[in-house]
Structures are given as C-alpha cells and as structure tokens.
Length: 150
Image 1 (tube, rainbow, N blue to C red):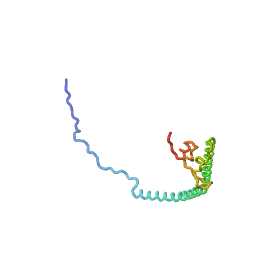
Image 2: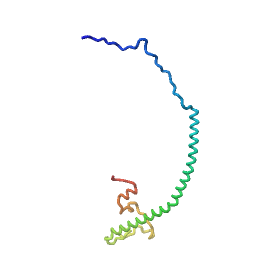
Image 3: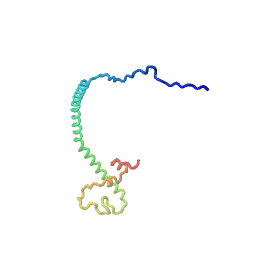
Image 4: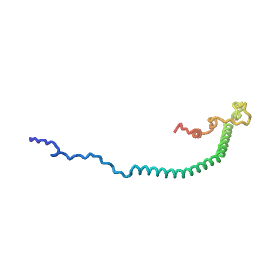
C-alpha cells in the first residue's frame, strides 16, 4: 500500500498582490446647493397649487353646509312623523292583542292610567324596549348596531 504524501496549499512565491482598500467616493450627480434650490422651487409650486385648490374646497364646503342646513328641518320632520306612526302602530297592535281580555283599556295598567298627573294629550316617550316591543330582534339590533348571534 503506497502512502501518498500530502502537499500543503501555500501562497505563491513572492506573495499575493497587495489589496486595494482605498476609499472610492461615489460620483455626485446633484450637489447640495442644487438640492436646496430644487426643494424651495417644489415647495413654492405646491403652495401655489394648494392656494388654488383651497379656495375651491372652501366654496364646496360652504355649499355642502348650506344644503345640510336647508334639508335638516325636512329630515327631522320626517323622522318625527315616522316616530309617531310607529307609536300608533304599537298602540294598535296592543289593542289587537288584548281585544279578548275583558276590561283591558289600551294605554292603562289594569284599568288605571299609568301617568295620572299629566294632561290628557301629553306625549310620553316610551323606552326603547317599549318602542321595539312588537318589532323583530333584527330591527332592534340594527338600531344599536349589535349582533349577538351570527
């Protein structure tokens, strides 16, 4: 069995070439003064465009607010009308449910008026549970934006 002699890997005779580790600066395309001048030019142009669009935005905002002020009483009146219609539907539903009960008078509790000290035609706002008593749970949960079951 012949034994092979191992030859160690050595540097070349005379050594390796010297390494170039000196700093090579990057090529400058735009100088500092040019960058600052460009920044001021872009800022001035954008401020000019901003003032042009700001006037338009202000005019549109005034128009939007004016239209809301004009239509708000109409929307409030429609909401109040629907509220009173729902109270009427609740009263009619109670009358329909309790029509077979002897002595039941709609708007009373066992024949006694609930509010004894109020004048006859005074509106007493019901609680939300009383308001939604004849509605589905979906209507009630949509009003409060809640979901118990998905």
